[in-house]
Amino acid sequence: MSLTLENHQPSLENLPENYLIALTECNAIQLTGEEQQKYLQGQVTCDVNTLTPETLLHGAHCNAKGKVFSCFRLFERDGSYLLFQPKSSIEQSLAELKKFGVFAKVDINTTEQLAFFCLVGTNAPAILKEKFNTLPDSMTPVIQTGSTNLVYIAGNIERYLIIDTKENVEQLVSAFSLPVFPSPIWKLLEIVEGFPYLDNDNHSEYVPQMLNMQAINGISFTKGCYLGQETVARMQYLGKNKKALFALTGKLTNPSAEIIIEKQLGENWRKAGDVIACYISENNQCYLQAVLANDSNQEIKLQLKEQTDADLSLVNLPYSLTQD
Image 1 (cartoon, one colour):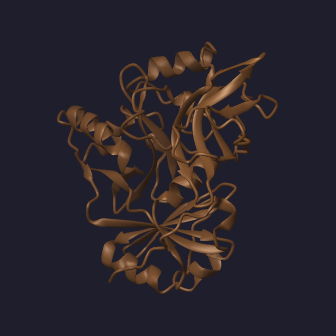
Image 2 (cartoon, helix red, strand yellow):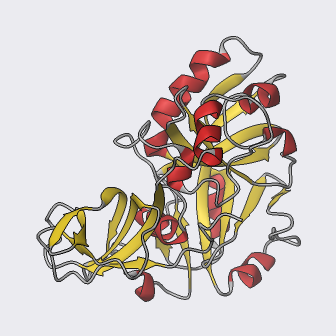
Image 3 (cartoon, helix red, strand yellow):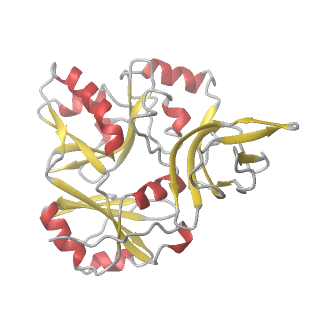
C-alpha cells in the first residue's frame, strides 16, 4: 500500500483542522538486552530507571564534555527501548552508543522494521477512538494495542505518534481518510513547540540547557553519573549557561538568502545566535529554531541579515524558561 503525500508546504495557520504526517525523516535507536536499562542510564541525561511501558521521557545524549549528540523521546516497545528522533541526529549518537555498548549485554541498532506517523488535529482523539478502545493521554502517554504503539505528545499543538510495521501502520492511517503531509511539517511543529531538532551540522555544539532540556524535564539532576554529567551539573548550579532555545517566525523577502538572525545594539546590528532548524512555507512564512541569549524577549529587536523588513518575532513556547 502506498499513501499519497501532500505536495505543498503550508504555513502553520494554513494547515487543515486534522491531518497526518508521514515521519519518513525520523527513526529510533533501539536498545535490547539484559543490561539495556543499566547501560542507557549511564549514557543519557534522563532517569531511565523511572521508565515504564506507559511512560514517555525526554532526554539528551552527550559527549564527555557535556555537548549534545541528540535529543530524543524515550519509550518502550515490546520490552525494547526506543530513542525516537530525526534521522539527521542518529548517526553520531548511534556510533557513540555502540562504541561503549560493546562492554555491556545490550544490542543497539536503528528500527528498520518500523514506520512512524503522527496524527494532529482537534478531532484526533475521536478519530483514534474509531480504531482503539484506549487512548494515551498526559497521565499515560504510551500505550500498546496489539502491535501498534500510540504515544501522546502534549503541547500547544497536541500530537499522537502511531508506530507499527510499515504495512500495518499504512493500512491503519489510510482508513482515517485524512491528508498526509511529509516530514517537514513535523519539523515545523517541533520548532513552534520548542523541542530541539538537531542535525549532523550542529551536534556536539551545545550543552542540554542551551536546548531547553531542563525546561521539558529532559535532565535528571539526582540520577547520578552519566556521560557529560559534570558539565551539565556545573551549568545548572553555577549559573554559567547564558543561552537558550527559541522559536521565531517572520515573512521572508528573499527565500533563497542565507538565514542569519541579528539583534540591535544601539544603532548597530550583530549576529544574535545560531539557527539550528528552519521551515519555509509556500507563502514564504519562515519558522526558525535558534539558540540565542537566554534573556531574549519580545522587546529585543531582531531581524534577518539582508532581509531587514522580514518582521521577525518570537513564538510563545508551551513551557517556561524561568527556573523556580
